[in-house]
Length: 294
Image 1 (tube, helix red, strand yellow):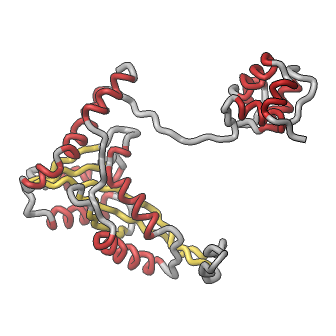
Image 2 (spheres, one colour; image 1 turned 135 degrees about the horizontal axis):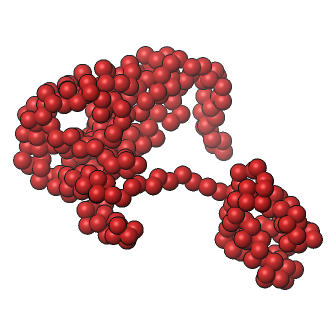
Image 3 (cartoon, helix red, strand yellow; image 1 turned 90 degrees about the horizontal axis):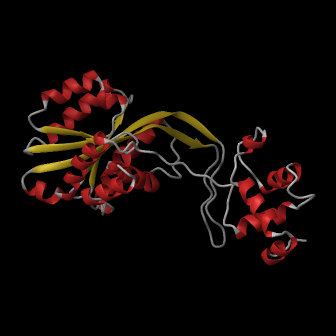
């Protein structure tokens, strides 16, 4: 029988509950266990082994954790940017572009963000998808056939939110450079191109650097700081694009996926493209960095 939260508080004195909460906040390795995280059952076992209580049900442990708002069974990833002078300078230049994107466009300058979705798998479901009907959601076959991968490069034109896409044979400099030349040729009427992307190997290789030097009179390259690729608005673009054009996809070949991608980015521009609402400014960044003690 599961005790309500109030009953759990009565059954175990405050000091015992606090010790169980402290145990939940410690790593299992701290008491010589090899497991990587706690469950309510393993916490109950550990509490008994550590002599905190003679016995306790895992459901009672769950009530104690709930009352303390502790969730040891959950976790999420996060990145730790190094908030040094290099981070601040790189971020400042990128945010300057975002804050002035419309004024730059009026002066025939364009802000372009580039990002890749490498190794997209062309997966074909082994059985046809069963369409939804009243009272039943769509059902998709779990098993699939692999037909190879496609590397998709997306460019976001920040002022209006439209995109351009390319399918590359490989995610390397040799295949990136012709795409850059094509992009810069399409933007030849622009006085200046502010190119924002991350510091991936194909972006910073010697071959790519040679290509960019050929365009240095027009192209200004801005690299996002380490662990801060979220400053690249193309990440938002590809996330939205994937949700609408790749999720639940079913392709019979690699060529089928490539054809789909080439048609999809054009449809995205017709139906969905819009400038992203970007609220992160240089002032907010400065306040954030100062709040971290830098």
